[in-house]
Image (cartoon, rainbow, N blue to C red; front, top):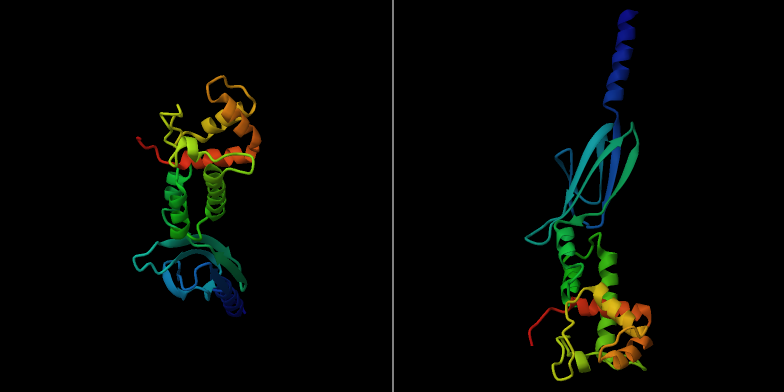
Length: 224
């Protein structure tokens, strides 16, 4: 009797310890290589049978000398269940590169980032930044129905015009440019450009002034 009882207990222990479950993995990059607990399992998407308990999932794309995208996750899975995991692979070094150009990057640099890291976690921020830069650029070169363009006096590169007494503004901080435009719009300045700039800035909305400031900030500082 005791032997039978021991056998039943042992059988239950083995079944509990080695109960099988399934991890169903899908990825934002099809064909990425999946490892579970350091063991190769195949290409994404896939389903892998595992024991209940803790597991480490590691996924990487096929680089072939291109940008490396990776995903890592630790999960704990119960007995005889299917746990689904959606793996959004993130480009290595994307954060470093975005922080480098986030504040002062030109339109071309930021578009280049989006092309290089098309599915990074910064995608929405990058798209919004490009849209504001494009709107600011259009204002700078085309103006509006009631506002002349900026390039005529400030130059295509915003490096100023000595003959007109216009100082360089390329690369100035966004907040500085916004403050100047807002002061002009409220007629708080008393310099020689007050009449012209007061009229211009007063015709721009706050959003337009902000977009213009972002674009001017993105221009490289050059000597005339």
